[in-house]
Amino acid sequence: MERGPAIFAGTAFVVFGAALLLWTAARTRLRAPVAHGVSPVASAVLSVLFGIAALGGGIWCLVYA
Image 1 (cartoon, helix red, strand yellow):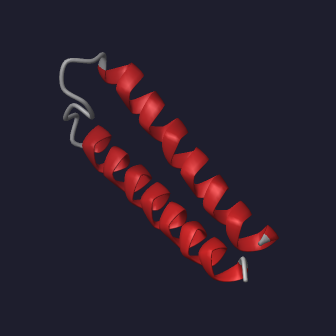
Image 2: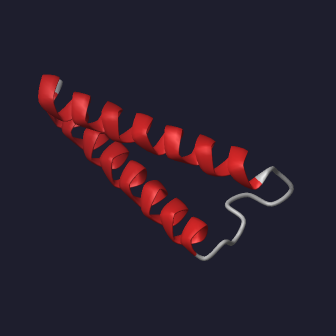
């Protein structure tokens, strides 16, 4: 019963984390701001950390559910 929601949540987290990491890499490569009004380094680092956390949470949902 719990397998279906875990697969959905895991897939959503993996897709979001991968998209966030790809978007951050593209913005950083173009030297464009990742977030407006924030330090470029801080916004890039936080974006990468949240992307990795989302990927990790998604993989955890998919593997252990």
